[in-house]
Image (cartoon, rainbow, N blue to C red; front, side):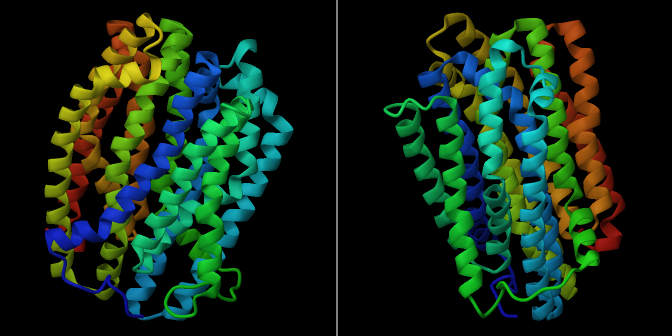
Length: 442
């Protein structure tokens, strides 16, 4: 199978190849951010808090899609590197069908048990109705969310990252326009935010299905059979990404509970605002990891050790540059950010600005951990990848967010992520050194 994965990458060509995925991730994060701006401005602070309360459940759906996408693309790209075009296409089709099936199961669970779920996440009676509405309406679009995640990775694997970028851009623009229409003139409230996001996801999902059905050369949909081995490999390879998103769901719920304790609904609203910008900044690192992972998997499958070294070293340099730049930008935009989202409330504005400035120290570190985990996924070592993610997004964060606020109060909540990332970096660096002779990337 011939595609642009099979080349010697320079820094510029590597960045050019990964850039569409990076922009795609930014646009995907904009879905949530645009919702937050319109919900806060057109529906109210309480509605914004309700969205943040139920978001951990939606993260579970996203987690499954990302797991199948990243883990599956590693399996498919490796087969492409080995010259097995038929097997690559069969696995791709099977994973898409499996992802849709799982999303439907989750929809049924939410429809049956939404009341205990919403209350268990920390909602009180004032937040329940908005939280329930947003959660259920978002889950109706679950298959589109899964397929959007899959196509985001597999357009890259197919050597067509610009196609995915165009679709995500179209979805993001549609989401922004419909947010205004549904929550403004049509007065649909928080349901309008969910429907607008769902339609934004539907555009890349539907067009992607048509593209891979019509396409007959390269990676495309084809007849498939049940392949438990491919599913297992995809899940284990992508287990770090699953762990990252599932852990985020648990940790976000814990953060919300801590913030309700220390600052009430204002704390939850401030945290939600910070998370919106965090989504954009982290999406740059995630997008690069997704965009470069198929290249790593391809050359790993082809046995090109020199190119693996080239890719790894260039990636570390790029991530270091972005880390410093994003930290500086975060400090500069803290005031306009707080003004944009919550400028209507002076107390909430001050809380958000201070929280973001402390939280932004995490941007100096998290890119290295994100790339380290994704790099091991691309090398088909799901165990190490999952361990990095498990420690980073669950163990360290949970321990620190429970302990540090006892010492620093609410500032301890804002600093928890940076300290957890620093601890994880020690683990990531250790694995990189220990496995250098196994995979020959150093």
